[in-house]
Image (cartoon, rainbow, N blue to C red; front, side, top):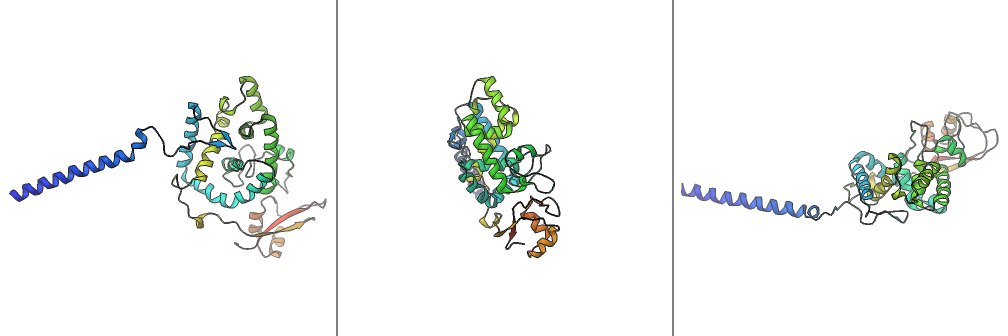
Length: 297
């Protein structure tokens, strides 16, 4: 009986000690919360070198919202990180060549997830151009050829927009916001509200969230491990080597053309989504570059 009592006392001591250790560990883990500091929140976020004023309470809360949303959109964010490995090497040098800050590549991420999507309003491609805007920015858009689906051409067109918007507003942040709200719409609100800083403006719900979504994806994609997106290098979508063939005449049968290049119609269209039909009509002798993969098919 005495032995049983001793065992019982020892067990109770161990149990109480365990609770103490658990409580101490729990406190240690939550110490950062007690101090009112979040370990996932960026200290000095900026867009294109322009400060995000976290001292303004609604600014901090709006960024917090987009961080939390995108941290928890696991599949969507993982896909963006994987696709960026292939898309960013195309986008980055074009931005640099045109004097556009590198941060604008994250605008493409929030617009399309870096794939050629079609919006309900009819915007298309990675940069989500509407037909008339695309034509204004120098792209060919018709039933046969739609350069909104050409990542290089559409990135060049996006750069022309950003430069024009920056010249108008004097701010890269407002230039980015106007990509969503339109130059006329943003400028109207600047006149009405008599302020010229994006973070001071009251805009539509979508445009108010727009730059914060960019900031959130920038933060997460630059620091994926910090946000528990542990993606191995081999899981990223690889850049496939290609060659480019210049064409200055019509191609009556793209499937036959593809076979002549050692690939099939599907692979041809994957690498040249701007070709919208089963043929290429070119009666003017215009020069087009068709991309042919060298492996990975």
